[in-house]
Length: 524
Image 1 (cartoon, rainbow, N blue to C red):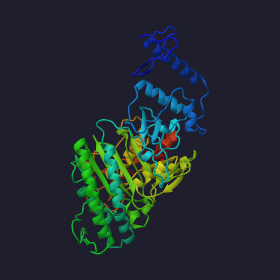
Image 2 (cartoon, rainbow, N blue to C red):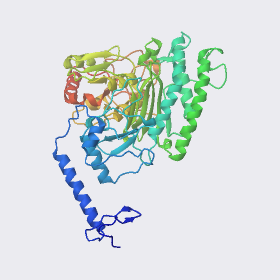
Image 3 (cartoon, rainbow, N blue to C red):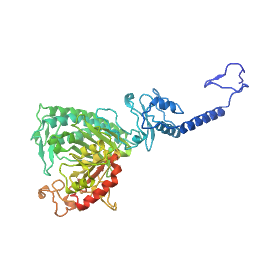
Image 4 (cartoon, rainbow, N blue to C red):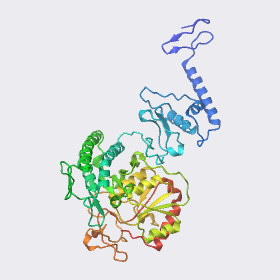
């Protein structure tokens, strides 16, 4: 069609059509070429202008105005993925400008591997994040009372462990009132010393029984490895743990029933998750119902944790470490292979101290004392492997070095959580190995023999199969035999550190090797 030279512009279903002076329609190819050229010029001009500093506060509106393209939030429309190149370019430019928000309930962030948009629940918005804090494994210390946590939530086909961790976290929330009621009402009858001279309370038995027989009752694991070996009755009153019967009208009995009903609901959620994506048959469960039982008995509840770890192919795959007694509850969860990490941890000053802090038990071996002296390090004596793992994530420049007294159910969840947050946990023997010939990590699998043999280790009541033949640590005796040690004892020691401590890795490694040369670790 031809349009009148001085008449109205002709229209089409797509909108008004621009015309040539002589009335002929403009070719579509020319329109697209002009549009692309204009966009390219504006983009190059924007890149040539000075970039705002990431360290200085920049408002979202100012950043959006600076961008050479519109960032229009699709509030009521289903999310549509942008083309890979264009979407990645937009996100890189947005992060370079300090943009973190794109309308209510939307957050832009950039990671090392993926460019993605994150829709926050309930329209929550996040504080501006720097590009460095958005890398996988980076840690954002959150106030325990804050609902904002640092997590990587990209959904991928075939993933599901992170969804299981979210359900398990809710189960820990449900178990917390029960653990607290036992903690504040414990007596000499509710706790006892085991044959290996470690402590046991009815909280250990009840939490383990509720998790295995209720929460995980509808899914099938490859194996279940749990610390406690005790018979419990949680089906009808009077409830019992071993030969101890819980009073009928006690708060503990009421909390057992409340936890049992809630965990049955979460068991259905796990069953639904398993039906959609079968993940559990390839996982082994490593469970420590109350890590830090001695601290539990001695009223140091902040050191006690519930440790639930999942292992795959002999590796710590995922886990959650949860403090059930602290107020409010603090915890961390993660799965490195799914790039998922989440936490609600205590907030500490974010300083860059050069002096490291060593996390140790209440009594230190000569090796640990020598290591502290060589590093001129501060020492923080706290209990519980899980509690130390959370403390690593909470406090900057902290290190966890131990040469004795742990088991696989202590370290499986802790290792998975630390690694998901960008840190590492490994065997002390591998950390000190000059030629790196030893396997770095412990093997997490159901077994009847210890899969991580250490000929320098010595028998103790904690790691010996026959408790009656060992009275205490054998400092100068013969090394133990493979058939004498428990299959899940960690007899190679442990070294763990968060991402924030890696800048001193070489110095710590050199000091550790020097201390081990002067005072050989006990390895028990």
